[in-house]
Every structure is written in C-alpha cells, then in structure tokens.
Image (spheres, rainbow, N blue to C red):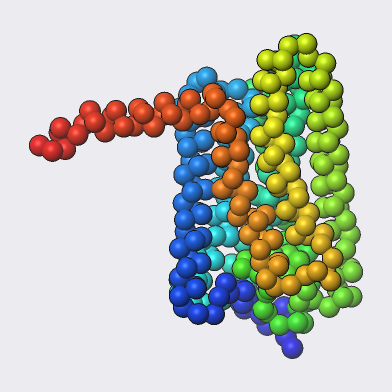
Length: 319
C-alpha cells in the first residue's frame, strides 16, 4: 500500500511479454507514427505553401494537423521506447506531463472540430456572409479559443487527478498515462470528491456535440434544398470528410471513457486506447484528402516540385 507522496514512477501496461512480440509492436508503432508524421506533415506544408489554400477551411485543417501530430507524439514515442528497451516505467512528473499534454491536445482538437462544423455551416447555409463571419481575425480568434480551452481543460483535470491520494499501487492498465486508469488507483471517497470536475468536462463535451449535430442538421436541410446536383455533390464533398473525422473522434472517445466497468478488460482497454489516441492522427489526413481535389492537387504539385528540384541539382551532386 502506498500513497501519492511516495510514488516516484508509474508502471505502464506492456504490449507483450516475449522479446519478439515487443520488437514487433515497436516496429508496428514506428510505422504508424511515421505514416502520421508524413500525412499531417504533407497537409501542413501544402496549406502553408499554396496560396490557393489560404482559406478558413484549410486554416482550421492546418491547426487540426498540428494537434494530430501533437496527440500521437505524446503517446507513441514513449510506448515505442518501452517496447524497444523492455521497460514499463514512466516517472511521476513524466506521467503528469503526458496527461496534461494529451488532455490539452485532445480537448483542443474537439473544440476545433466544433469550430470546423460552424465553418461548414456558414459556408453552405450563409454563403453571402462567409467573408464577414469568418474573416482572418475571426478565424485566428476561434483557433486561439480552441487551443486556450484545451489548456484550461488540461490544467483543471491534471491538477485534480494528481491531487488525489493514490493507495492502490502504481501499476496502470494502459500503455500511456490515462486519467481513468490513474483514478482507479485512488480510493472511492477521494474520487467522489472530484466527480464535479468530470461533470464539467462531460457538460462541455455534450455542448460541443449538440452544436455539431445542430449544425449538420441545418447543413443537410440546406443541401437537400439545392436545385443543382453538382452543388449538392460539392457541398457533400466538403462536409463528409469532417463528419467522418468527428464520428471517428467522438465514437472512440466516448467508448473509451463512458463504457461500463463490466465490459472493461486490459486487452479491450488497450485496443480502445489505440483506436482513439493513435488511429485518428493517422487516418485524418487520408480522410480529408480522399475527396478534396484542391488539397490533393496542392500535395501533388508540392511533391512534383521537390522531385524537379532534386533532378535540377543532381548533376552538381554527381560532379
């Protein structure tokens, strides 16, 4: 039995016990991590370099790519290092930093997805007011609000989580420091004292979810009233990627944090954690570029330009 003042490190859940499987998990996570870096990095570079993509929708997409890179970089590198070096340990301060960064980036991404639904609502339902409602200053303020809300949410939950006395040891049934797993180490009385913090988070998340649903109900009504089939197709092509990203984000997150304890198991929790913390940053670039011809064209142009530059300088390299 130990309390939080005597805990200097936490023990994370290992992916496997045998060395071969540990190296396999390291290679798998390394591949996933590199794909996420490549996909989000291409979006960041394309949006930043192509002036045709300097619009509110792509500005928010750039912020989403930054948050995705941060989310996966908070959890995956430590998990890879533990598999490679056959260890489970993470320091107390490292665990607190991981919790703060993950909650900050996760909350900011949810707020940003809510803002992006508003962007699609204005673009389709109020196109004549789009330039006024979503000017450069308004976009910067909304993006700053999303990042700021993430900081405040992370500070609140991290401070309350690590203020709880931990009497159930220091072993976490997860491959990264996850708040529900840390709360399991506290006694029920201490947990109930901080349930109001969880309720605040649930209320804010519910408000964002209701806003997204209402926005898409209005969008659907406006799209169905469009006389042109081409116009409906274009509207759906800009909304479906965002709706798919929101669905992936919300469904996996809700299942991870709201599932009943009766269906909880270390293996199941591990799979769900990978789904909501690792897969969205990998899949989001593909979802957004799948039906977006402007983005695919910008990425293709950027890659072609890189190859042309390398061919231009290759004679000098051979000399």
